[in-house]
Amino acid sequence: MHSSPVSPVLLVVAHGSRDPRHAATVHALVRRVRAERPELRVETGFLDFNAPSVPRVLEALAADGARDVVALPLLLTRAFHAKADIPAVLHESLARLPQLSVRQAEVLGPSPLLRLALERRLAEAGVRDEDRSTTGVVLASAGSSDPEAIAVIAEIAREWRRTGWCAVRPAFASASLPRTEDAVRALRAEGARRVAVAPYVIAPGFLPDRIARGAREAGAEVLADVLGPAPELARLLLERYDACARARALPLASLSA
Image (cartoon, rainbow, N blue to C red; front, side, top):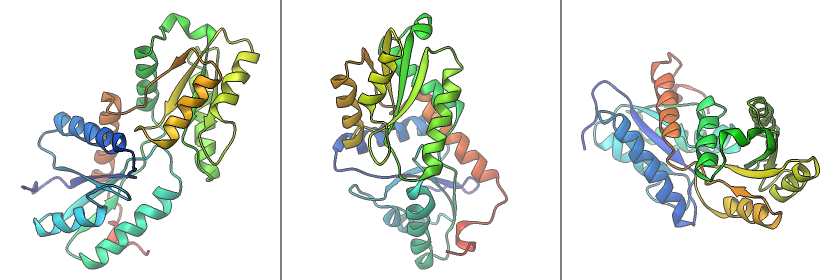
């Protein structure tokens, strides 16, 4: 493999899952990123369950002569994985690979591009723009015990409501309340003529399946697909990469663990 002498390698860091749909979706997204910028070297590493692991990818990059890496968390909120898991894995690897310089990019959310991707998925599921005023939307995320992450989801829902929807309510598949089914029923009680559930998740898996079950059980008329390899998501990955690659911040290897 060939490493660019100028641009840092983009290492997309995904969580991983026992569900094979997760890795397949991550790889589809990364293929779209490569297609958007074919001159950029893009690699994928997983924190758990799937191969290759992040340490193995970094070892391979170092052996291949790469020196500068941007590690981009494939996460929608800045919660435990972005604050603790990923930095710990990177620091542990860099202690063994002093020739590498690695910077951790910002997580993907919040971003207007994510809202556009959500609206793309709703449109694909049959929601027309003229239906906004009578449609209530459940913004259904995986959930987190991190208050910062929960606050971000709530703010995204408030901002999205201002674009013309009847109402937008956040919901969570784990760790926090309300659940998807409760948010659907609450919107119905508030008078929404139709309820659409928009999963604020990147790839299929256990928690997205829980979101889908909740939507069906509560009778939501529309269930959108996960964000997956949406073109807006690929553009967002490159935006985060570019911002980190341009930044004059110290590389991760120079920061205290």
